[in-house]
Length: 394
Ligand code: USQ
Image 1 (cartoon, rainbow, N blue to C red):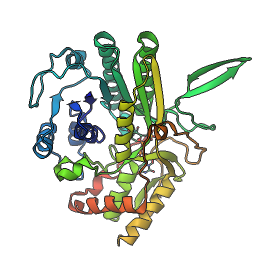
Image 2 (tube, rainbow, N blue to C red):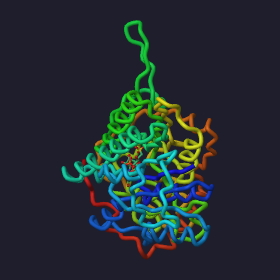
Image 3 (tube, rainbow, N blue to C red):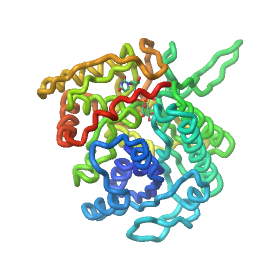
Image 4 (cartoon, rainbow, N blue to C red):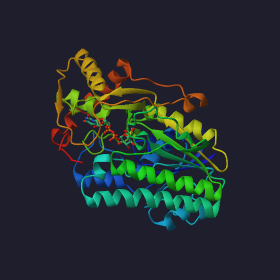
């Protein structure tokens, strides 16, 4: 299979590229370096330095003999996106620089992924909306114009649903109204502008499916945690980008870093906020199995991509327990919630579709947390306290 990974430099993109490549597929990654550049601009630091995308592809090739082709470009520009389908693209790195051809599968991660970033200011809100919607729209039109059979796997987010008082279904809801029935997208009501941009993406894709019979899988993913994957064991320079700051870090990764430097765990508000979580290794399985089992033509297939649910308090207690066993003086501190979100709410999402496809979940066990602690401890000297909490208000 020829797989195009948009956003191939990111936390999920790079591990996905190696995962497909190690299983024998032709992989091309595209990235604008938005995340790296933003980390520099906002001065938020990273746990460890990261080779460039081209360097990573070269390291991967040295160890495995496999080629991941690299394109550095901004997919907001429709011509750049279209060049990936027309063959007029310029690879920044490839062993064989001939065009691999129109991809069978496009994995679309090329989005501004941070809720706090989207609410820093009207400018960052505009950057989020502009990037996320234009890239998605450019992709939809490229597929419409060049090859409608391409399977688009788009990363959505569980946050699109918000925290409704009823069970969350996998994407769709059957509605009975005045004696008649129909099936609609499950109601969406996001808690940040980033999450709102993902709702708009879903709507774009749903439009493309209805108008042009596109094949789309939307993976409604919860916050991901983890550092190592099987492929990154080959060489530690192949590890994914790892942020622990307030803007780009997600909660479990942040809590482990905080515990290592004995910074009181930043529980926002009452800590009853409950979300569905999954291990980085499970993201890879989910995307891979979705690619192997395509959506039908004219189908918007939606899976809820989570493996278990936790409240913020439960995550803090788990981190405290494992950290204490490892000898860290872990403390928990409730701080006024900078976000506008329910802190005590009903949460009962369904997540069966990906398990039915064959995903074997990795759960957040003490052992899994311990392994993360061990990696983080190795970079303890790099951890900056000043980026952990700056208090970006909604
Ligand atoms: N939280 C804390 N303390 C912290 C950080 C977060 O209490 O130090 C709380 C937040 O208030 C929130 C929950 O933990 O209730 C999750 O926050 P998060 O920052 O880990 O995740 P979120 O902002 O929701 O976004 C992340 C990813 C995003 C993805 C989303 C999935 O950045 O790309 O789409 O998780 S979901 O949350 O299901 O929408």
